[in-house]
Amino acid sequence: MLTFEEKLEIFESFPELERKDVSLGRVNFQFPGSVTDKKNVVYHLHPNGNGFVYAGGVDGYETDEKGLVNIRDFTADELKELTARSIADLSGTGMKEAPANAVQNGPEKWVNKTNDVLIVIHEDDLWNVYYGVNLEESFGAYGEVEEYMAEEGFSRRK
Image (cartoon, rainbow, N blue to C red):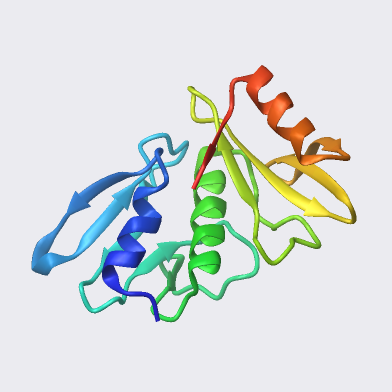
């Protein structure tokens, strides 16, 4: 299980999220760019490591009645993927399903100045760039991805 500090570090790596300290040492992370009334992506992250991520509009997760997923036992990669998908859902880009055949390293997130998010995944010897679930571009070499992203004004986020 990831520690509270490790989970905080993951959530703080998403520039589109704003940290909000709440009672009893718990922390929420809100997405002000949400196109819905729903703003909390992370709800009540507790110092004991327990907490929830909103996945009400994201396929593949069992949620409670509020659309929340308990993240107590998530790995770092699972937590990053769910958070990125939650933000994409709340931003209206609709990344409800992860692109197929993701590699072990997981998807790589790129963001521009207006907080548009592109996801890069190495699949079947190609580097594919996704906007939500839509394939934007494919490249034969990672260097081509970096060149494309620089030209389009995107930078890699951890």
